[in-house]
Length: 538
Image (cartoon, rainbow, N blue to C red):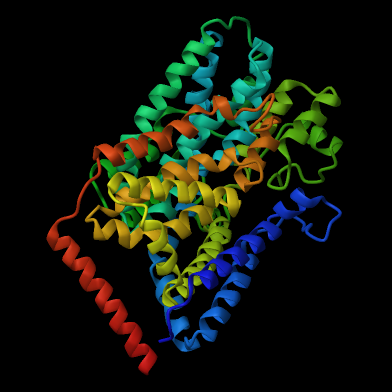
């Protein structure tokens, strides 16, 4: 064991981490100009986190900590993430099984039927809620159905920022509530909560947030009248029909998962059960041979067919393989297809394709899993060296009561979204920092996991240089702030954190743990510390 690391060295480690992340994510290049030494081609946060690990380890070693002790901290930190890693792998298989069986296409198909011009904003938000819940991805929702809604809204005379705000609100509702979402799995993993308990607990904050959001959209849309060009929507539905047999039976898999949540079944067996049910329904309803399922569950689903017009449109924008859609920029394709005078139905078919082709599979989760491992390595070193505790103590001096603890947690997540520019780190690092603080106040872990999602997840798209903010801006063709910005209309994204803070001060839904449960937590902490010391001595 080394000596206590001074606060200035802890802050220097954090500053190095921030600069490394901002560099690899291309934020510094945007700030100082693309032709400066600060410019870096946009990349992932993995290498930046590894560099931060090395810097933190160097600081710790200089203060007397042995590498063997730091390594034990790393392994202990990673071991706590093994359950969510297993869940993420299972979710990857679940997504591909839901697509292949037709469950997700059916939800999208029926969801598109609710579009009504007189309540376009409200219907758009609800539709994006449905699509995002079914896919677990706000990016996919905004980049596909969202683009179609932007075009339809323009035809109705509704401003693009207003439509974009409704799309983002719906997309991020689903992102934080879907068991298929990586953030929905990551938050309870960091807090030590059960996945399904976490989802149920979020209903306390997200339900009033969504109700307020829908009321505002209904009021805004009352004065809008017109006729929508629904050919893009029809194109999406036709493309889904061309590749799947659409019927109500396909809704059984998502209904089963909802039932499992209600019955409080453990997350991993429940999700595996959802995969098995989807495979059975997919075999009967879509005629998928049993021999095809292993590849589908591992690598994801690929479309069987596209129209000749779609192939021609793909070729016209320089894509040799129209089914390999993951690298496509949806707005670029839509613009190119329109400029080449392709029909709205073809653009609609593209939107349907990007929604389902190449999606899911355990392999699709590897990037997120690697990021978790890198982040847990960094957190393990910061924790073992005491730097995380020093930083947390400073922040907790502001948290005199439960309301202030919730407020500090939420603003820490929002600050990480602004500083680090990454949604996952905004969940992982504050989750590690405040876990013991919530436990010591005898607050159930699901309170912390809810705070993480009520802040880190929903506000990430409001930061222009955040990965989520950049994606939303590119997909929807409008900035977050300033003239023509969608942020003022993304109502759920800033109502949700405020309601969470309100609950913190009033105590509403802030569930406690019993004295016996708290004693078990303290016992577990003691065992982990003893095991770490034994490993170090060995």
